[in-house]
Image 1 (cartoon, rainbow, N blue to C red):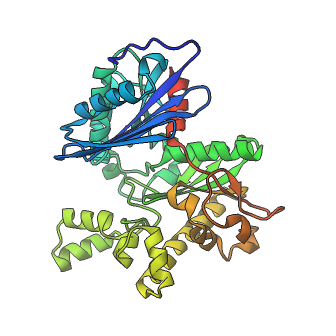
Image 2: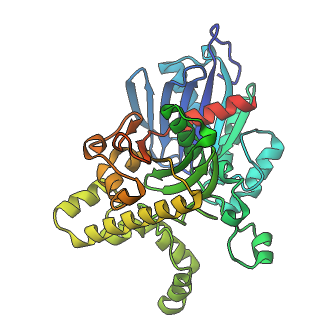
Image 3: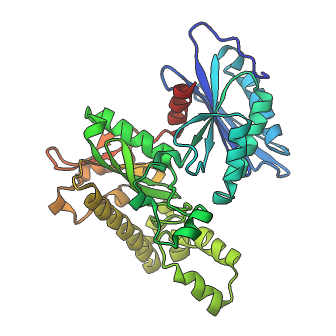
Length: 404
């Protein structure tokens, strides 16, 4: 397929692409049902051997082959669709949706990509140097190989672009902040928008009337306070480093630690950046970044692992308390993403001791992994506690359809 699509009658779909620095994730989503018709990933792009996974109809195909760059990766993906299905020529592709990490304050929602939008994404790259350049590469390659359908950029930051000024503004010298675009931008906004909207639908409540806290807990983790469907605060800031303790990131830390390590440990800015982003968090405290491994160490009596878990849970509880205060009234707390959906220990521990606020977790309802929207608070609880699997690809699909 070079961009032209002759759809089967009534068929409409969106091809969702998430281009990382060395990977290309993709999903073909049915526009009507939201069902994933096919999905996959090309990883280790540029290595001697790249890994390729393609899944359709429950059948997974895995291969290893040399893939030099993202252009070659997308060629491979299109070839997999042609070989293994579904046939893109009959899929009725109406748009290609692209995940873009940082949209700054320019993109308040999804936007159809043209040369000017590409230029804006490139100009914003200093705010997300590990992500935007890779996202942009995927967009440029896809526009060249699939020229006959609209391409839509959906930014992670867009859901938080309209935060109240008091929430988005740091108490940094105003001239410096303005000159260098320093403010709270947030991240994971596509997930927070999807989950807060779906929570209202699942509960049969009017989104405009709900006061919610969303906890997106994966290797990267973020919290948001959502009032009436609009975010009023979020834990990640200028970058995804701020906020909750994460797999390898510090989360909130005294900024003077940077000065201290530079002056007393002789560490460079790049070394501190690496320390904070890749060698801290759960991994820095315990030696492991995976929460399942951490629990195993805790059960074996490892004191460092126990402390790491306690630090992780305390930070979560602090944000729940802070956002409860900001919202004034709290109706729903929703856990999502890999840890949020699968870790009952974290869900229970994050909310333990908040019973006086009407926040209670039922042990039986909370037990185990959750694969569909599930209420884990007792009947009649003042605050509904939910587990709701996120679906960022579906949210990108919805937003792409809205703008075309």
